[in-house]
Length: 309
Image (tube, rainbow, N blue to C red; front, side, top):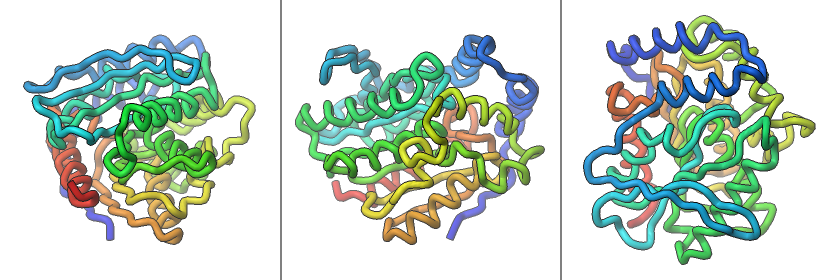
């Protein structure tokens, strides 16, 4: 059963207020994308925690560029890694904007985390991000990491992309990761969840028009119900254990709740935790918001419990 947590902290309420004032009211168009990218960078900027170092990666892989960064704790456990796919609606975000999550997971798990710098829309619509994720997955396997010793994680659009990656791996006959941890994953770009209206006032980040705008830019000419665009519409049977976190006040609440139901009906082990009154993808505020750190603590514990060391 989902776990509904307590009243949001003062820090969570203050951050939500800032989001309501600076992000949620904005009418979006293509000309606003540079501003949106700058605002996201400012809101999610985080210092690396002590004992974690970042190492940029840029290399040719499978005939194209692979970009990202390794987040490495001191003396990481050898042979194990986590592939992280950042959020940002497929139009914003980068490894640097999500270090509050990636660096803390690296430290909590004691492993190296590779955060992928995938191509963004509208310059690079679907399937560019998925192609980059597949390239990163093949690279980790080629580097000698066993799939049963790789974890996968992502938030928001990156959480949906992580699911799409696993569906693509099934199509291509590639091995799947040991488990996947997803924070507020965006799984239905068609926007058919009831929370899109039920949480219209409660959601701190977005209005439905902003979500539909990003979905249109990313999907481009591909139907939004295509399973590789919206993995909620895919065959989830055979996926590894899923660790899911979502807030009950998000516009995208049902993207996670429906995912959990469908995955379980396909025989997938699901650990679902529902938090109360928090902003979308709140682990991005770890270090500023206690619920962000608590979510990452719970995720690390679940990953370590799900997969044998």
